[in-house]
Amino acid sequence: MTVTGQRMAGTEMQREPTRNRLMRRADFRFLLPNPRPERTICFAGGRLRQAVETISLSVEDPHGRPPAAQCDLAVAVDPDRALLAGAWRALRPGGSCYVEWYSPLAGGPLGVRRRLEAAGFADVSCYWAWPLPALGPVQFWLPLEVPGVTRYFLTHRPALTGLRRLRHCLLRRAWLLVRRLGVIRPICAVAHKPATGEDPPASRTRPPASAMPDDLASLVRSGWPAWDFGPPPKRLAWLLLTGGFRTTNKIVGLVFAEQEEAPRLAIKMARVPEAEAFLRREADILRSVAALRTGGVRGVPVLLFCEERTGVLTLAESAVDGLPVFTHLRPETYKDLALQATDWLVSLAGHPTPCPRARWWGDVVEPILEDFTRSFGPALDERHMQTTREMLANLGDLPLVCEHRDFGPWNVVISSRKELGVLDWEGAELRGLPALDLIYFLAYLAFFLDGAIQSGGYRAS
Image 1 (cartoon, rainbow, N blue to C red):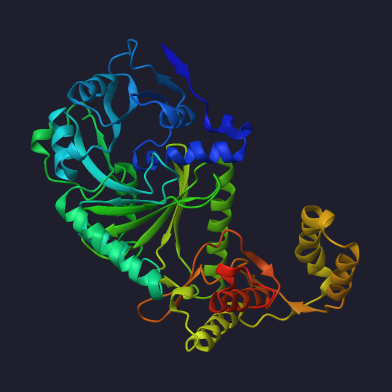
Image 2: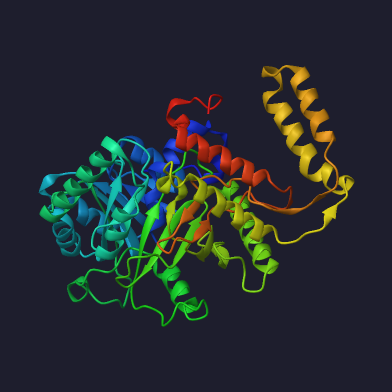
């Protein structure tokens, strides 16, 4: 018996909270060679099955008579030997298997690998997902067998202060101990059924760096020398970040070479079709910003490629490494950070000449005023909106500059070399207004310093 699933485009009719909950429960699909499987067999129920139905064209009932060797994906939770055998039979050659192990009897990554290889699967990779996939949206998928990625992840968590910093350090030590003892849970494993002509699993027991899809890994390796990254690595690893609050938030994979402890590039993927517009816009913005200067603008990601992969728009850019500015913020560092950001924005702006008001008002200011009025008009005093319009009407000719439009202390990072980098360019405006990014940055820098982010006391700050 076949249960027809909903294509991702069909989920547009769902309410966003429900859609977001289901789509993000299935984010494991971005660890697979094909993130949009046509035919899936799911040995689990509840929300996991609903999520699988959302991303698959059809979902087979494991209690019926699933067709042999015809499924693209098999999904299971805490499977026994018989269930793994059933998943193997249902998968076509080259098909993928995704399993979540919550049982302490799984035996850690090594035990999970042995179980899957004994069932005939190959290229097993184990991840730790947090928060627990069964409890809420996962924020990240950390490969458990790549020490360099683990060290990067642990050292690049936001630096906290006081009791929160102490708690963070204790949790990190506890996590390392649990991982060393092999009792970390859950273990999320990805593997595949060897295609015809591939070596059997017994001859492929060395753990791969990660479950980075082969076609994507090949694309990255082929471009490695052209991107001035040096000789292409034999193995690649990646850390998958799936945070955010909406389905349109992008998936980000940080790609590492061999055992390096810093990512070389960031790969962004659209979770849903309507998110593709944001990635295409980011690609266009990065191309244009690179054209502003010979050799690009320091601290801005370099676009490497933007193309569809198995029906999912995929963008790759050079990684901008560092910790967010707010993690460096102290009363004694506030001024230096503010001046450093100011200098960077001045450098990005260059030396444009003033542009007549009539040439930018209708494209830059009026749409924002209309959107604000439409969204918040009923809650505002009309006199305040009129005063705002009158104040803006006093603006004269202004130079147009590249405006980031989300230049906040969370998107501005400081590297180990004390250099500034800027993330997330999909909302930028190439012909924007000067000073707005700086005002936005300085306001939020003060909010972080004063504690207004936690207390909500923005007006007092």
